Structures are given as structure tokens and as C-alpha cells.
Amino acid sequence: MKILHTSDLHLGKKLNGKITRYGEQIQVLKEIREICENECVDILLIAGDVFDTFIPAADAEEVFFDFLNEVSTPSRAVVIISGNHDDWQRLSAPSLIAGKHNAYIFGGENVPALGGDSVRATKIGKNFVEIKKGEEGVYIGALPYVGEIKVGERKRDISYGERVQEFIDNCFLENVNGLPQILLAHLFMLGGSKGSEERDIELGGSRIVESSRINQNILYTALGHLHKRQVIYNERNILYSGAPLQYAFDEVGHEKSVTMFEICDKKVQNLKTIPLKSGKPLAKLVAGDLQSAKELLSAYADHHVYLTLKLSEVLLEVESKELITSYPQLVDYSLEIHSSDMGVDGEERKKLSDKELFEAYYKKEYGTEVPQEILELYLKALSEEDL
Image 1 (tube, rainbow, N blue to C red):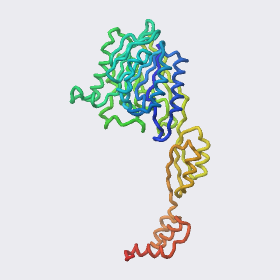
Image 2: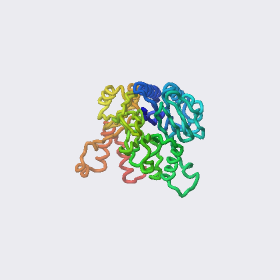
Image 3: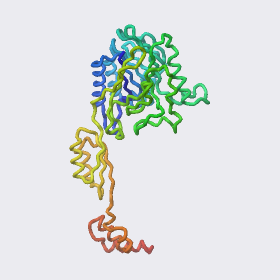
Image 4: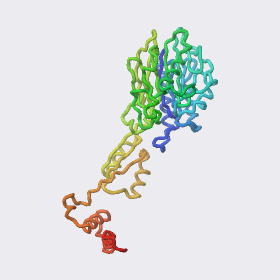
């Protein structure tokens, strides 16, 4: 059976809270669907964070369910879990209907309905689904994001890692037929590298889960939460597929992909990554003057750009407005003002009086000699005279 692993769609997410990316998200979901068709994928796994917020916009939900309607077929199953960004009840609310269309959503208390044809669910519960294709089959344990409430619901003296291990083990209690086992989970695992856009769920390390918590009989662990593709344990196929788009500027240069593998003879075979080409890449640019910045922005017109301007003086308001209005790819920019130290080096400054230092500063800032009345006010203030 051919299986495709992705995660962290974050539908509705805005870049830096400003730039809507629905067009790119629709594009990359279409690309994932085409990969499923071209590679004859039997099962698509989505490892949580379908949406970016607990209450997603109607547009985000429309994008997701349109995709789900197209990618799940009688010959292709889709298995989805909720992540820490998702409202598990909201996400899993349509699970009874979705199951009849061969899409199985796990997160709430609902047990999805059985569906499918040539690829079909033969057994299902609140935390697992058994899927078969002819005589072949896999058993998928579904572990949505485990929050603090679930950890403490039974006893308070148990660690987060121990509780998660219990949840994992419970996912596979119903595998009485000894089918090959896959775990679909939304976790932060020891060894993973967290980027700036993943919300802090570790709480100083208390919510990090060791790979040893995952049963040795699990052939592949499809993880979600971290946005960069990462292999946690190569020999045991424990890995993050990563988000399908670059969602933060610390992902610049990081190639996005989905992960595909086959289950054959109770082994993982032909594991490979398939690069994703959809969506605008992110770029971090640095310019030393305004003209260089404009040239760089023109060269990166097909990117989302964060620009650092290293200047000797602040931008005029008209210059700032020109950057923002003329270059729509500019997501944000920062200024680093580098003073020439008033044109006076450290040794020379030691020889100058307070009056001479103020005169040099004023001339640099305003381009003219300091007016006499201002100079007198400064000197009076310096000597603590009454103004």
C-alpha cells in the first residue's frame, strides 16, 4: 500500500499577520492531490494543524473541505488528526459524514463511519482505523495533540511523556489481526528543531516526548507540529514531513516536500520525499541604501520579502510609503541606523569640548550650523543654570 504523509496545513494563516495566502494554499493542496493521483497513493495522512486558529474563517474551512472532497475517493482514504492549533471538536464535527466518503477525522469523541471501496476502512474506533486494499492492510493509530487537560485527567503524578506513551499504546489495543502498524501523531519529539512559528508547547521541556515512548512494533510514525521536515529516528522511520509552505522567515531556503512510502511484507519500503513547488518562497534581503533595496526588491518580485535596511539616517515618510506601495512582495522591513559618530573618531572626541561635540552632532543631524540661541540653551542646561 502506498502512503503519503503531510501535516501543518495551517489554512487561513497570514504571513507576519499581514499577507493572506489562500491562493498559495489552494495551489499547494492541488499539487498534493495531483501527487496522490500520479503516484497512485492509497492513503493520505495529515498529521494535525489543519487550520491556523481554533475558530477558522469560513474561507479556510471551504478550502479544506473542497480539498477533502477531491482527494478522498472510494480508492483513496484520508486520515486526519487535530493539532494544537485546531479546535478538535470543530474539526471532527463532520467525521460521521466524512467517513462515508473515505475520510477519517480524529480529534473528538465521535467515531467516524466506515467508508471506501477498493481501499476501505474495515474497523474503526475513537483512536484507530484499520484500512485494507484487497488482502493488504494497515492499522493506523491516531493520536491528536495531547493537551495538559488530557494528561492530568486520570492522575496528576504522571509525567507528560508517560501519559503520551499510554495514549500511544491504547491506540493499538484493537490490532488483533496483527496488521502492520502506523502511528499518526501531533507531538513535539526530542531531537526536533522548533521554528519561530510553532507555538510553544514544550513548557521548558515538560512536553517533549522521547522516541523510546513509541512502541518498537510501529513501522512508521507520521508526525506533525514542526514545520521543517526532520527525521527523528531514521532506523524506525519516525519523522516530521513538515508544512507544505514556508510560514516563517527562519524557513528561508528550506525546501518543502511530502513524504511517501510503501508498506509491503510488514516493512517500510521505497521511502522518499517529493518536493513541493507551489507557493511563493520567502527571502530575507539586506541593503545598504535605498536604491540597492529597490533593485533587490525588483529582482525578488516572485518572493515574499523581509528587508533589512542598513542606513546612516532614517527614511523619510515619502520614501517609506514608496517602498510599501511600490513593492507588494515586501512583507515587512526593519531599519538599522549606523551613525558615522558625527564624523569624529574616538581620540578626536576626547579633545573636544561639550560645546564642540554638540555643534558637530547638530550639523550632522540637521545639515546646518547650530543656531546661537539653541547652543546657548544647551550650554545653560548642561551647566544646570535656570532656563
